Length: 222
Image: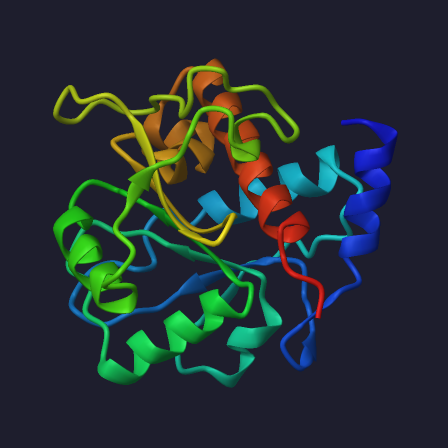
């Protein structure tokens, strides 16, 4: 990371988000519908530890847990959704998520093999006019801190499909990032959980660092 980029990150770390001071951590979203929103319990803590060790961001090393209707939602610049089952949002949650993202928030969804169809259905309710699109390989999420010239790393095999980084852009800003057929969340977990090779665990953490740094540095100044 360059010195200039480090200074920019430190400056942006003090920006307020909405009406409350931003807390630099990742908020796991608790959702209804029957899916296991709590999956991969060691994943987010491990990623937060990596962010704290590898960047100058004053990040908290404990994940938050929120619902989309929680008043604390505005405190967090990075929301994380994962699980193996169904996601179902109420009309109020759809409106709240749209407002959160429009105001500068970032949502990362990690396909843990099983939530794909329901997530696509629900995000289409949030932004019916903005379909998921492939994020270009030249986008900063693939080179902001660590280089990923070929895009997302493939952590686990399921259907033999290549990993895809899909997203929704609001203007030039990537507001939603969906790692599909990659299993980044599994890759962040303790190495003995899935017995992944060290290089895949490292690749997943590096990609997560990129995502978090992008989420912080891309927020509009208010």
